[in-house]
Image 1 (cartoon, rainbow, N blue to C red):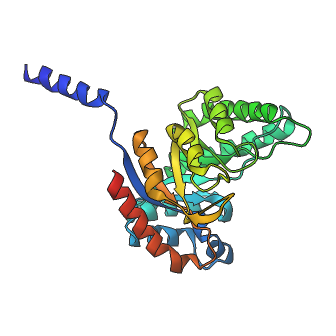
Image 2: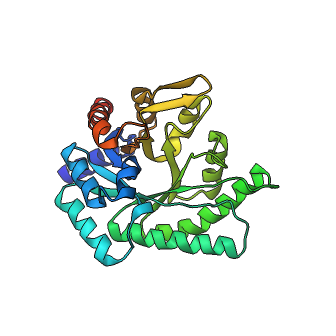
Length: 279
């Protein structure tokens, strides 16, 4: 009787919508200048995340020296020993490609990065849709992106990796289009990497439209729309995520002019506070 009661209680608990859970994180792109110059290595980002009481890192791969085990496995070990999750990597992609050799090359490259993510233990890759090619309609380009993501999702799913299509201009300039792409793919392994500062008009209205599909979220210090620059309202964003029962990371992607190592500690503190306040 007791076992039955416990089973019923557990079933009821998991049938209810899950409470939002926001976890603060660092996006490696924040330190792009230091990574490019060799001032910092990726292991240093693990250290910075730990020192600032963050939970995870999104490793933009642009400055990886290679993808051999000799580089990847010590990085994975460093993260584990620091109590930091490498939960995501970010790769360059241009998915607005018709069927053909160019698409095949892009697809093969994406499969390579899925393998890298799996080896690092990252459950997510943020990818970019790309520009609408000259002479093509947005609808046609969106179909190409959906086709590429649909095929990639099969391989990603076999490796336990989610693909997050970022709202990043081009074909993903409008929330309506990116939601349409993800709906067409219709895969549990494809969602939206929500960058809360990449829309240039009706910023928060568009964020609200794609929040239900978010599988990863990035915040910036500032947003810029037709009215000019303004501080990004992280609490407003967090409330939208909570309303959609989002459970995942809020990663700071720092893009302002002041040196990242000097400017980010205060922003990380604010990020921790926002996550705690809304979880």
